[in-house]
View 1 (tube, helix red, strand yellow):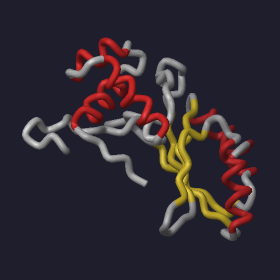
View 2: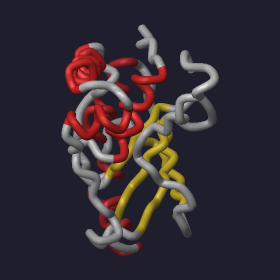
View 3: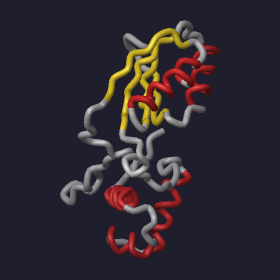
View 4: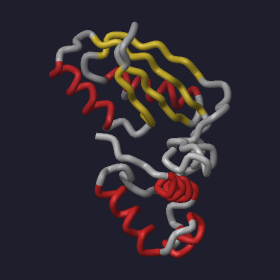
Length: 164
């Protein structure tokens, strides 16, 4: 069920994405409301599941994780039990940054972060190859990140169309 956002909600979300540690008083000032309605709106969006949490965003580069590899994974069995086993196992691999089930020529797309090619080779040999029901993989090494946000991008509210 979609949560209906008005212009004030969008402004609140944009500010929280920029800085989730912003005090409510400053957030209220930036969105042009008082503290009480802003705090209420934030709580409502949290309770509705629109805001799912707050976290620190770490720099993979500063952590030495400069190598990004996308891996196509094909499974030997795609019945529900096999999918659940694969899903649980892939969640236990810390180097897997993202995993998506795909409708197409393969079953899953994984985003792996590693220090370098040797580290990726270790991850592939020790962890990925041990995933249940894994039949085949194809790896694609990213040469450069052009856009990598890790967050949804909301458009600024349109003052001429407050409902958008």
